[in-house]
Length: 79
Image 1 (cartoon, rainbow, N blue to C red):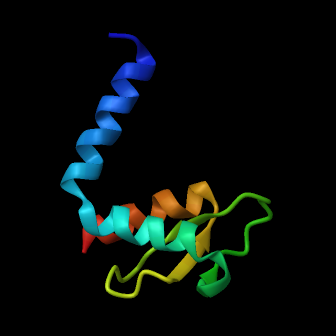
Image 2 (spheres, rainbow, N blue to C red):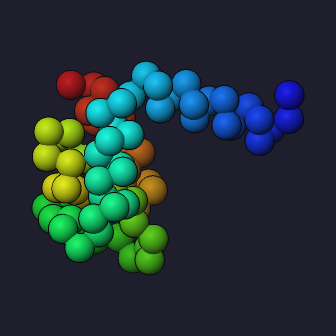
């Protein structure tokens, strides 16, 4: 199995195991004009990722650089 096939399989399994996260990501992608940014990190990176602090409110997101996004997930795991 090549690297792309491994990545695709990993994503398929992740999607299957995380339907609420997939739905939230799809809502943001489908309705970018309705997204409410509740927080944005102050880092000077042009590309920011959407983080959903509450999946019951899929259009409310935090815009975080990759580093801050990883740190936020680490912080949440410690709780």
